[in-house]
Length: 252
Image 1 (cartoon, rainbow, N blue to C red):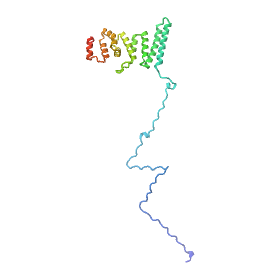
Image 2: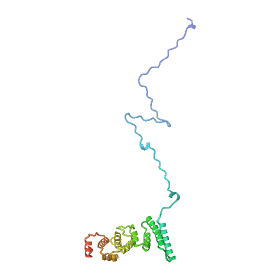
Image 3: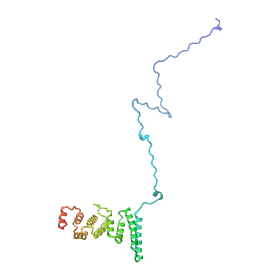
Image 4: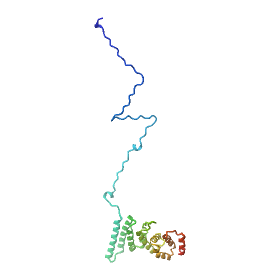
């Protein structure tokens, strides 16, 4: 056969052998910077933890506080000094009017006293233990109003007494005024009087009360005498020593 008419056959392709079984698992690669880390696998049968309430809820915002009108315009808090000073000024004015006028009518005096008393009482409300306010107002009421008004005023004084420190000298002056006024008004059974008599006797001795004890004895106020004497000696009324003394004095 001639060479021009013959055709060459292509060689058959070689097939790769088929591999059966599990394929190779690629090794886990470490994460590179900037790449997301793989999520952890969930454990079957175990639910994922719920987010906490504190993390779920946003923190409450603090309400903005508004300044009060007094704070914005710079109003100072109420104090007793201006009211006490105003009361003293009005009292001096009343005395000047009395000196300049031969006869001041009762209504004018009463009007001035009402204003003076109001400012003193305002000062006492702001400073309840201000001795000067009580003493000065007490003297004005005694001169222009009545002893009963003074007794009611002093009866409201807030004493501070302790077994260790006793009574202060300022409080003791109020006690002496109470004793003087209540004895003059013959309020012998009033607990306010008994309290002040005991305080005076403890601080200055039972002898300072001798005159008042004689007055109470003459008025047959045996119960008041027993309470005062036992209180000064810091004993109960039914204490055997006290009972013997009371019987000797014919107070029981």
